[in-house]
Amino acid sequence: MITINIWELIVLFSIPSGVTGFCFWMIQRKIKERDKHIESREVAREKQIEEREAARRKQELFTIKGTSAAIALCEATARAVQRIPDAHCNGEMHKALEYAEKVKHEQKDFLSEQGIIAIFN
Image (cartoon, rainbow, N blue to C red):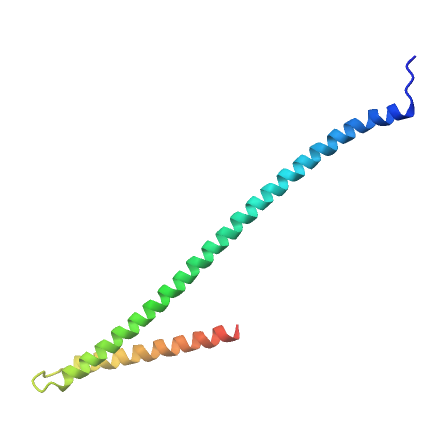
């Protein structure tokens, strides 16, 4: 008959528990590494999105400034042509000038409204 003392029994039962604990520790370590990798990719992705959004905003600002500059140039040109005595401006020049001024004011009002909304949100 085989006799096992209490210490041998404890060691015998602790070996599978130790192996199982070690395996779970390895799995947990792999999960943490994967989570860190995913988190770093998310941070990089969010940074890229923020940079893209900043570039889009800057592009939008340049578009608005370009439109305003074009309208200003058109107004100045129309007013200069109107002053030339031999130019014989027809009603289309006056209508175009009025339309450009109307669009300029509508754009200014829209941008002011958007600014107010952005301030209070």
